[in-house]
Length: 290
Ligand code: GLU
Picture 1 (cartoon, rainbow, N blue to C red):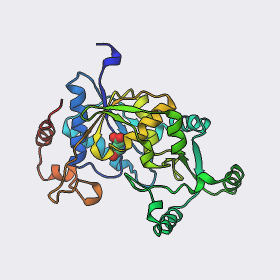
Picture 2 (picture 1 turned 180 degrees about the vertical axis):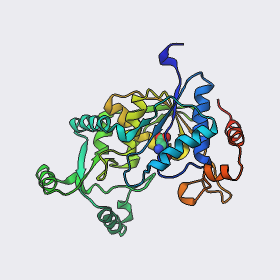
Picture 3 (picture 1 turned 45 degrees about the horizontal axis):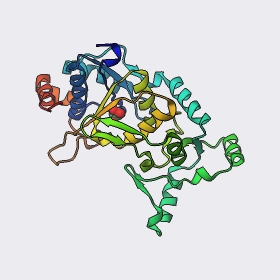
């Protein structure tokens, strides 16, 4: 087997809370995909959100994964240490002419969407809700410059129609669903650099999977739609396209998926109650891998 054939997977949690069973499942799933292919398993800490990420949650990630018996290549990649990589990617997109500054506040966007509700056909919806109405796409260069120079904070959005036209038709291989045609326009002009941090989930995941040499992205099916955007960014940035596997999500007794905000029991709470890591591992091993 040559190095280029080696399967490389990763687990990419955000240190915004303690890991719960859903995270354990995702981590074990990625680890198993690598192990069964004699591949490599990596860890990435997705900590670009300065308001929500906390050092104690990052420390807990390492501790909880060790408790589960997982081993990853050290050191883990921490996104907050890699801002130069994201800046370089934004530069390249900017040179392609597919980015524009967006000065809108959340309230302004909501007001615009609410105003269009009188004419609901004007409100387009994507996987994450109503699409950005495109207000700042129409600004002139002069207006952009004067508002930026006046110190008005801005995000960077991708001009999706333009970017998709530039990239042309794109596909990716989903291990379970086969060849998927990328439809990034369903997301509208997503933010690639936020006002509070000059990067975004979509940008960082795409850049990092390439830099880390990930060949198989495994993650929950809630992130399946995001792959449309990631495939486009790969094409625009000249990055590798990994294969994908989007696995099912664990649900709680109420049938809803486990989530931090729903106070799903954390691994450390379960551990304190006497849960054994082998039980958690067995649960992840029950899923059939093709
Ligand atoms: N950091 C993301 C999360 O915690 C996962 C990113 C990914 O797997 O693409 O949901």
